[in-house]
Amino acid sequence: MSKPIKNRSEILFLYDVKWANPNGDPLDENKPRIDPATGINIVTDVRLKRTIRDYLHEFKGKEIFVREIEYEPGKIQDAKMRAEDFLVDNNGKKLDKSKLTLQEMKKLLYINITKECIDIRVFGATIPIEKSSKEKSSITLIGPVQFRFGRSLHPVEVVHIKGTGAFASGAGKEQKTFREEYVVPYSLICFYGVVNENAAKYTNLTEDDVKMMLEAMWYGTKNLITRSKFGQMPRFLLRIVYKEQNYHIGDLDRKIKLITKEGIEGAEIRDVSDFVIDITELINTLNENRGKIEKIEYEVDNNLKLKAKEKEFLGKDLQQHLKINESTEIERLGYY
Image (cartoon, rainbow, N blue to C red; front, top):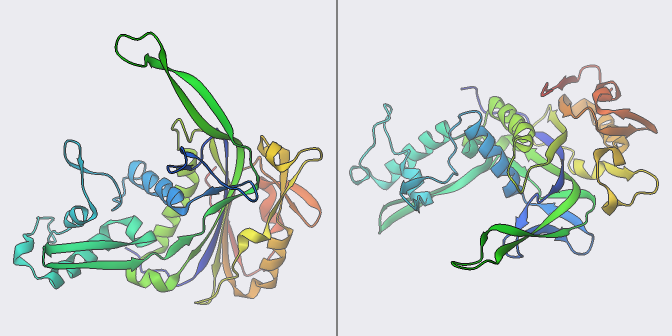
């Protein structure tokens, strides 16, 4: 495994969703989360992390700590039981915790979990440890990668849809059950995150892990093919890697704006062709900080229309507008 990362970086990620529910609120009839004052669609960081975890586990075969595991039919592990899955020796043999001190358990679990679980290296966790009812402790690892809540770049409409179910409402009855759901016709969602090199030293987050996470953000979003999430597409992914420790620009998500076509209001957007993303302020800010930037990595959907300094262009032409500094490496991630 490569060494923990040494450079801080920032991430900007845009994806859209059509006629689906990007993140339902279980305390509000599972409706899409909406800021009532602005009509902005909210998606929690937990939802994005779930997307990343599921892709890493299901598509890449990576071990993740936070997942549902049945230890008996109908019974799911709690965090303490999950931690003890990693109470093993170098040969993978299960150890008897009664023969270990609490401190020995903590040390062993820290080593094994950070070695085996990519989601812990990326997002951290608080891991409860229990040797007995009287001997308890925990391992707290601050996640090197932190995301703000995702927010749509425009107000959205929420549509209430009703339909009939396939089965009768009860035994011997002819009336079918009714189902209802809430969806957004369209939402372009923006996530902003920071990769903190200081926290990476404690979870052993590597550059390979970050690369894998970026891939999971892009392809994991695209592969959420469930009834409530089908229709999501990644549109734009940008990572800025800095030369010096403890430095980042900040608020990259506030340096882009969505401009609708003439005659279309924000809540009336229905397709990626209905708007342009103006990245002029983002480009200007990167230029102002070009001496501190080591590398720019990006991926962009070829159908996304961008605008910089009054010039509109398709996403495939982004690199020619990223003239930050001749010494700055610019890499398209190659997800297409």
